[in-house]
Image (cartoon, rainbow, N blue to C red; front, top):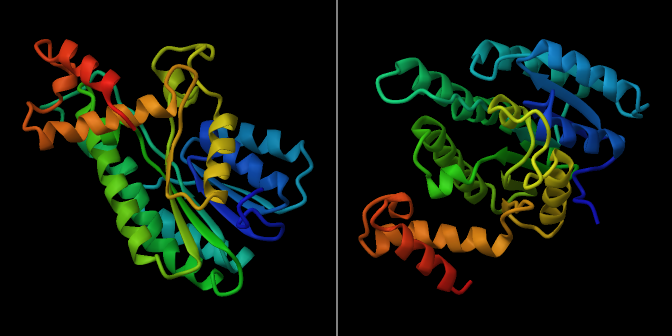
Length: 283
């Protein structure tokens, strides 16, 4: 059973919608006869998305908007366009993100660009459209989906800006859910597993690795968890099952509780012990 926000005539606004999980979600919404606004900074990818969705004969209205989620003026312009055309937004999916690689401490732009997109892209979206979603919730079921990352939970070394941005997104989503706990708007933190998206391709994968999920699998899992009323949507993949994810997350928290060195799972003098603890953890 689909979450009731996926209803004919309702409107979905999705950022990072031109490819990957964002596009798969947009397609799911379109197939449920929703109006869908696809927002993305990549105009070329957005044009391809438009061509593909238009060819499927969606019954709802489709809008394709080139925008930068770090720009307040772009958000203001989008709000004006959306409210004039559709009045309300029932589903807000804040999915846009970047994953800059091979840059680290001392590179100011690496941190600024990552946090502006991954963190403030979410903050800007909530600040701009939360009142619109709240207005819609008086008449229809509404939902907010925020895309996080397992790296924002277990914090593997190697990409500190990305990890920090996604850890902050998790915190924001949890706080938003608490504030909306007595409303008819549900909040969901989508945490994909290994997924074959534009970020995966940017890392050098030219075809879907066997261990990765397709974006459509992530959306299918998301919709099921939303139907079950779940806030945390921690997706497995073909290499890592849900139980293993839970064990790894419990181990990460254990660094604090057990006063181990931070990120002990990746330290040479802790690797074997960490593997043993994770294997023996009951969930």
